[in-house]
Length: 216
Image 1 (cartoon, rainbow, N blue to C red):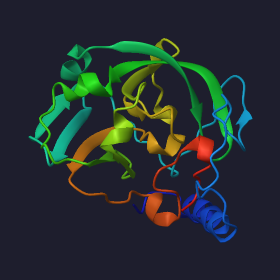
Image 2: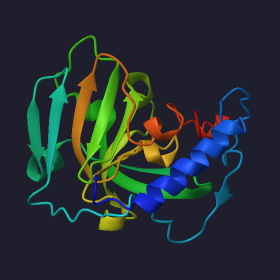
Image 3: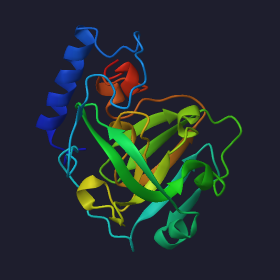
Image 4: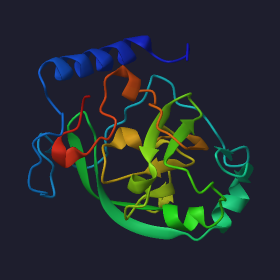
């Protein structure tokens, strides 16, 4: 983790701590599910780039996706991943830093299709996503089974760029974007919950934009 930008991490952690102290983003006051979640602003054109201060340069010929934990261990290489059923979809995306984009067209493997090729234990309840930059984020299985969740490799008809998490990132559009790990390297299946990188630093464990679940 030493290659990360500590100033960025400390600044975002400070924002989370301030939000916790002010009682913001607890999810106690759900609002009507409009297209633009509360507290968000719509951005046009190129979407903002946010990361931990480092952007792994992973080429498709060296990219691997490791399955571990409470599942049969296996590794997908790029050719195996591209042989899986591919789906193109258009969704919105919302970042905890208050920006949103509409009509993002991405292509990749929907979570249910991916799971047809993974043998997870029957008692799996959560998943931890691991990234090439050391980032992690956790999600319960129930959230992964929601529509539009996918492992994506393309945006707007072109390969996902390095700054946006290419060659593969998670796409979880019904939650804040930090739940969609960039530079996806591994998927760890778990029988109980464990918090990821931002979750242990004050971010909400769920991250529903329409409930403003920004901070724990």
